[in-house]
Image (cartoon, rainbow, N blue to C red; front, side):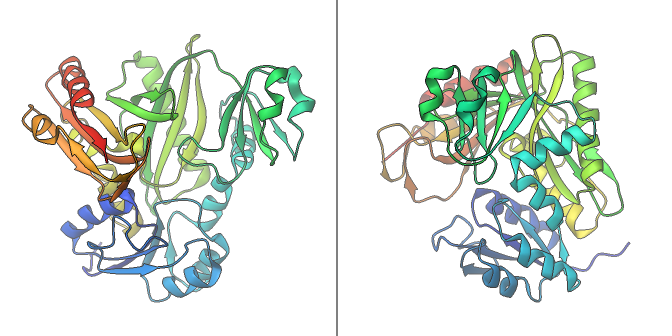
Length: 377
């Protein structure tokens, strides 16, 4: 296989995921073209070319894609109709439009798992204003079938008393799981069918924002749980026949069952620690997969903990980072700021990865980082 530099890679979305993809593409001499509606998006000043426009608009996506060698996404809420046309014109679109369309609909995701005997939590699909008809199924998590992102479009309905706050739009009602841990496996597949996955990581969520607060790599789970998680992630990727990266979010219940929660067809917050913690980062792995290169070594270099930097509650405006110099002086600390000018409560502004000889030492340092580094205005 021969590789030609100056591949024209178009990315729909110019946020932090695009930014970290660009940082890896530089090493392979790839020209990255970005489409994003925000004229101050994090990718603006580091992309080869930056186009301001909506990745949800048919004509905008179609025009943007003309002349690209490969098109990919950093957010799944994009215009799939335009991507299907581009694919029919011979442009490589990875992940494939049919995969993106499926994953845009959380109800269709659930049906996919059922059809392929992939274990997932019990669920019901409901239409508009139908939650009140399913109180016998409560407690549940209600998820909008379309449009949810980063904890938005998800809420708990614990009893009939909660019906008044239910979403009116078509939704998935997921039976609440007696949860032990939330896990994630990042898996990649290239067009040749080669598949590699990263070791399972463990997630800890902010209870207010429903966003990942800490990530631990490797996950503290039994060998059998690790093996099951790996098999499930690879099975989902194989059944989807996806080309590119797939984040498979998992539940581990208190009886030891591993269930697929949902998936994302792109680099994911649960893989950020791989930049320093693994031999190949999730971003480089995605690039390798979509441009036709062999996949990289996913083994852990050192145990690591990732801390998400979220905007402090009560602060909105031009971002200021308190304690940055102090945390940079700590052993094994790697700070990634996303280049977002404005902060607001619980907005993802960056992340910090701590690598260490032991996971416990990394956790201790990560707690110090969280207590010291604050994003204010």
